[in-house]
Image 1 (cartoon, one colour):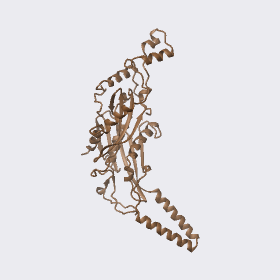
Image 2 (cartoon, rainbow, N blue to C red):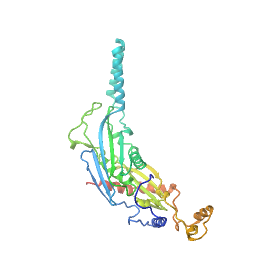
Image 3 (cartoon, one colour):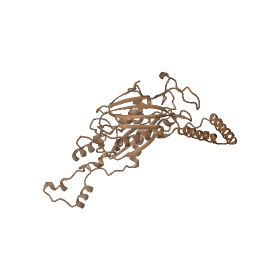
Image 4 (cartoon, rainbow, N blue to C red):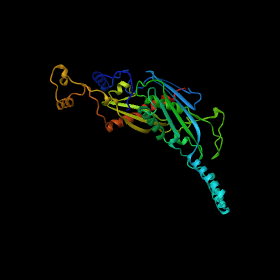
Length: 371
């Protein structure tokens, strides 16, 4: 997990041990009183930027706020640019060549045109048609945190496999999607869930002008914005919804969703789960990533037996390591060494994707915004 700059003081080993013990209970006792699967309260609204094709704003109860704007532009496809270059080369050759060569070029050009008019081609988009930029106060665009967050959210959008195909217009033109994410306040917690939920709402409300041209003609659109079509049509039960990436952590055998910054400081393992939804088939798993928990960077506790400040003789390094390995893990804070069991990762994923699980509950809540 990329480091985060914060003016808050880090928790002491005693505080980390107390928090870790509280989260290890069954059920876990969270600092803010939430249940293990409960998300932080939020305020959400859409269509907040009138000049964008789609936009949304979400504010968490802790004051962290994000705004996402989506802009769409028509762009000439790379295949069409190569065709134009080849035609320009043919024109230059015709200017210097003989009549027989000109007739051969014309006949071959007519054959290509016939093939082009008769076949629309495969309606497949490309990943590079989607661009994302994340702006976080106090961070440069090339810092680790914005780059890492952008890669994770973009990965979920691309792995969906359908968004890029919706940007296809014809063989010559396509839509280019620009997603601009702005975190309005310094991140008080890891901002991935906030940015992912806001992006989901913005894409859900993104509209494209209605196309009135046909086949491979230059695209012409309806000027009436009321006739614009949604990028993700909600009336089609076969259309997937924009993906959502959830942050899940574990403490012992407990699985906790939407962890706060203090809870991440004692996490044994952290997982990001990206899901999409099709109304006809339910939740679909898109991608899974393990995240290096910040708890590994915390300072370990020092027992009284190894503390020379008490007047006793400090043990040797080997003796100190032996005492740390044999000491009860609940009596003294020890940073986790990393790693995750497959069974634990499977339980995390199952809680997200199962019918009636956390993922379905989150997506249903987002669909209710502005209804």
